Length: 65
Image (tube, rainbow, N blue to C red):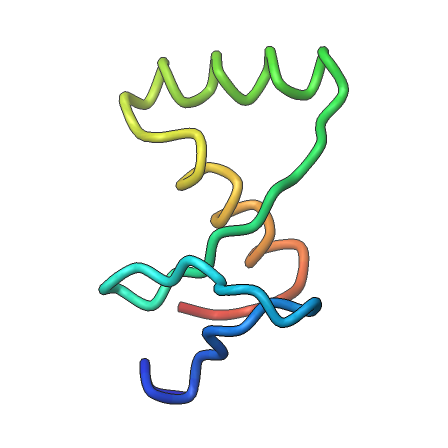
């Protein structure tokens, strides 16, 4: 799937944010303890929390890099 194949329209017809790298903006609601652990892990590794979330999601879904 190339960047041209990524949908730019949301489920209700609105514009969806897509980065130059092809990442699509998604909102996720977390419990306080999950958010705290995510922020701590990101700080310890000096990476954005979004990177930790993408790694965990790919591992959980069995998506290889």
